[in-house]
Image (spheres, one colour):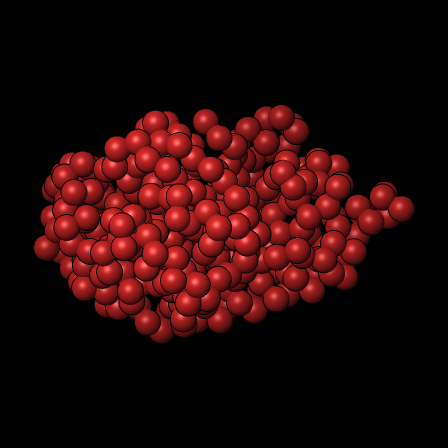
Length: 330
């Protein structure tokens, strides 16, 4: 399996620090969320039903007419390559590595290239995958170039897949309103913005014919009943969403300023994380881990991704560790 953030138990064992003593900044998942509803007992006793309001709440939240709930956007990432025969797939990289892995596993020819190479490569592709905002760089593309790329692909039956897992803090940049167009597939996460990664809920936004194919491939009951209930309530909580968005954007700016002040200016970022390219990535990650702070290290380019602390105690702890690191490195 590929390396991911959030492997806290493994870190606790490796560094011999008790699990409860860690500050986990490795995932880019909101460290706080909206008020949760009570889960009635029958949510555990009955099979999930699609008439419970989840789809309606999600359609309103994303402003779309068709979508499919899935067990986290990861489920769609793994299944979409099975809906096309072996073809030429381009992926704008660096990005979430599960995309390339999923397409290669199903026998597709995969090429990875930078954003600047897309226009040159487009005529030779059947599928293009873009993560927006990018993970881990935080790069946020406006809708216009993406729609242009989609138009060129759709002319010959191609797909543009846009993974918007980190889009919720900046919804005006989303391609969700265009997801009814043939050949445009938008993936959205529920767990990251709402701080509910354990619910394993995500959404595919696309034209209905493609969603029907995907639903048939996934089979019945892909989402647990309690997760459907929580999703229905939180997706309809407009006030909670506004407060969450404001808090995340404020904390994101606070994190950027902290990193700049500690001599680690972010190379990129978004409302849920910041990304620092540094030749010291491994040393920085190890130093923080020895202090019970887990961040996500990337090898190419050497870099570290910082998520947001949940509270003032976490901010103070990160500040102390980074200040100490600056003393050690100099």
